[in-house]
Length: 240
Image 1 (cartoon, rainbow, N blue to C red):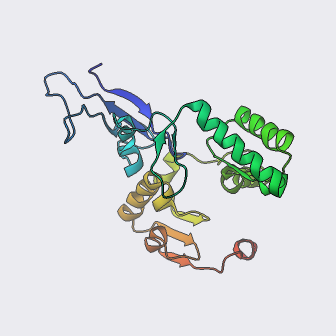
Image 2: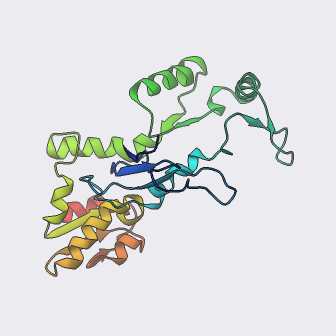
């Protein structure tokens, strides 16, 4: 493989386009790191409609996971002071099962809690729920999805009748006033923020309003920063 391949960044929900460049490319020397290992690279896809060639540090460094020294097998240590040692998957899974069983025997099922990733698919959640509630006998199962998208989806359905935002990326360059609440866009979705910020800077009439108790990078770019007390979002929205 010598030609760049187009793909999507796997991290946040913006869906930025990436081009993956292999170490060997036509008419160029093989790209290598300081130790001489072949080095893959990623760059923004300028033809992609959402990111327009921009890429944040997470997307720019995603190829580092292809390092030859990346972790490829389980590592286990007897204590926090002991060094890690390579073990088989059977040994690793037995150790996990043994420690979970020990907690269950000594503290009961509710001594166990499981926190799932927002990357889970519906089928993943189903299997995880069967394990946690059906096998381990605890209701202490939560996931990032509840803190992140589940609440947003419920709000979208109640407000707009659909489970997704009713706008698109092109609207960023068409807005006269952007109202950001419950988001630190500059750090969590920097490419979206970059597009909005460029539009904001180019057009003096465009206003940016940010609602956040903290003085975040997003708030620093705002024309109006409403640093409300935590938990008073509904009061503000009802007032509006």
